[in-house]
Length: 179
Ligand SMILES: Cc1cc2nc3c(=O)[nH]c(=O)nc-3n(C[C@H](O)[C@H](O)[C@H](O)COP(=O)(O)O)c2cc1C
Image (cartoon, rainbow, N blue to C red; front, side):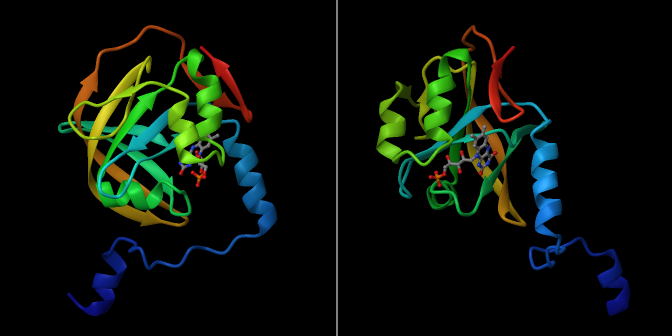
């Protein structure tokens, strides 16, 4: 295969330049995404890289063979170094009782104050498991893909916590709702 053919069929690498867009278009995109309602999870980690956690809506299933999900994390997040050093995380799906907690984990609150506001345990990894979460997915990170300002973390689910009852906390139109 000639170099030109190889280039034509290769997938974009992390070095692929990000397409330049105007600030106006970026704001329009953020406004449009605010219309995409999504469940709020509190993603946590612990280990040699330290304890950290953040609120996340960019979480979705990848496959059941193996059981896996993905999480998108901003590389400027205070959780970025801990998560990528520990290579483990727990996705805690929030319920209506976690509205205040989600605001703490989704803001600039110091990390110890975030964790002091709830009760935690662990499963297989050292990642904190939130008491009362609708579900907790304890994960090991298998692959990390860089894309724009974020990394896409593909995670193998290694343990699950029993379901708790409750309504789901949803972020829509820049506000919390329950269903
Ligand atoms: C509803 C909501 C959803 C969020 N979803 C994500 C997400 O999917 N990925 C991400 O990196 N940050 C997400 N954030 C932002 C982080 O929670 C936020 O960067 C962090 O908590 C505060 O930054 P710091 O930890 O660097 O201080 C979200 C915030 C909110 C309020």
